Length: 127
Ligand SMILES: [Zn+2]
Ligand SMILES: [Zn+2]
Picture (cartoon, protein in one colour):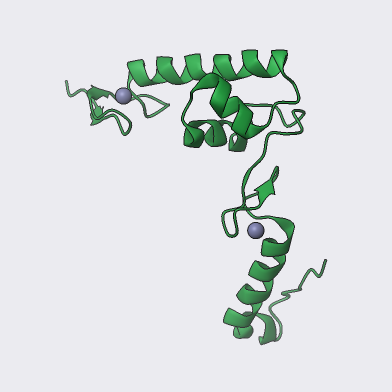
């Protein structure tokens, strides 16, 4: 019988494939980091992302991942992460509101046939 093994993307060690795609030690570390974040937020609900990074000593990318995955509740108002385009602080989606408008306009310009082809039923949603 063949065991499904893989290299952990975080630490590189060989592990048996699982749903989280991380080796058991990295999974345990991530869980510990998440509970530390939640503990700190419980004590300091108005803590910003930067403050959370400083207090927890957890890698910024890990914390931003937690926020994006919704593991840190959106009810903590100061938890922001950078817009993937301009770096502005945002709390929802991947782009800030001004970048998502720019992105939509660019997408429309790049694919005019998509808009102009008659009979496709394509409609533009203007905000
Ligand atoms: Zn690992
Ligand atoms: Zn932006």
